[in-house]
Image 1 (cartoon, rainbow, N blue to C red):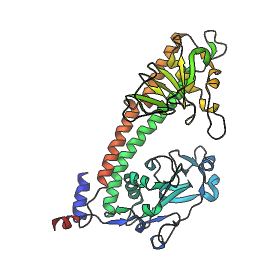
Image 2: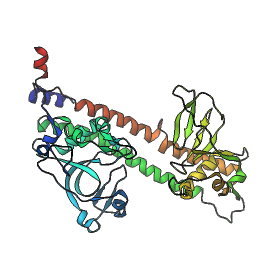
Image 3: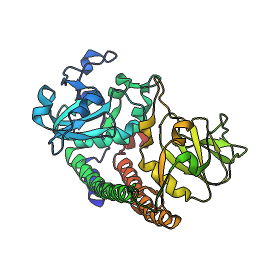
Image 4: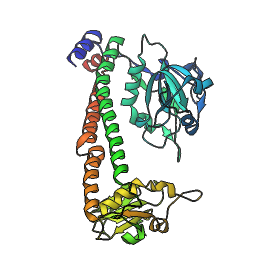
Length: 396
């Protein structure tokens, strides 16, 4: 950091020049609302829809699948065929339904792209592509505000191209990239370790919950036989200042002034994120898009939770338009019920793995979250510059 401060002091004594993004980048197509002089050159790509992109996915590929979302993958040159491109690029999704900061990507090498808007520096002697990526990440919320439309949103590219980017000397850009790369590499290492832990968790979960029909100690029952009831939540009203959480298909979706339940129960997403399984405890209410599984006190509720998670309930979704699952379907599921002592042992093992892989207050998820905050803090700090001549204007 001290080296960077000295470089800025030496190379940018009067501040840093800010220029419009269009003046230092080349994009993948001409945009209707952008004046022609702002895009004298384009670099065209062939695009694939997301589903078609991942049909190309193969193990041990060396061609990157540049998706519009968080999911990534690899393919080969032979499979990529006419869609193969090579270069150093920064992409933002053309259509998005989540925060754009989750979807801004940098890649250098061979790739196949989904429908992204792709930028590259028009002169890497003036603007580094990796610096461009980090700067765009730092302006993620601003870029996000340029997306418009209901459902899948699309960016107003005229506003994107008119953004003002600080362009310090290349030596300073490279030093910033070096510092931020160190942060992201550490986070990548932790994320890779977390993925390994998750694979271990899946292996042990699958091994522990894979019972034989010949096991004399295991009873096979319908889920309906192991529960007091399976019913849908009824909450449709949420308030800003409510005291009690309202659970929906993916977790807490709001608050209410009066609770309906005050003991631990399993919740299964009926629509939306169909089949997602979670546990609600304390005092709460449940929305009408979520099924409530109230397990008998003679069975370990956490064991049933883990088994339902293991079953991949999304496969039960049916119906055109908005797929769903019903309480009737859940009641008919066949569940192995080992002795309580075995249930408790399974829960104890899986609880430890679950905390390590998913608990944001401890273990790897907590460390990754802390590193991410640290990275974002320094990224935004490193990419904030005084404008050239600003100090002189203030002095006057």
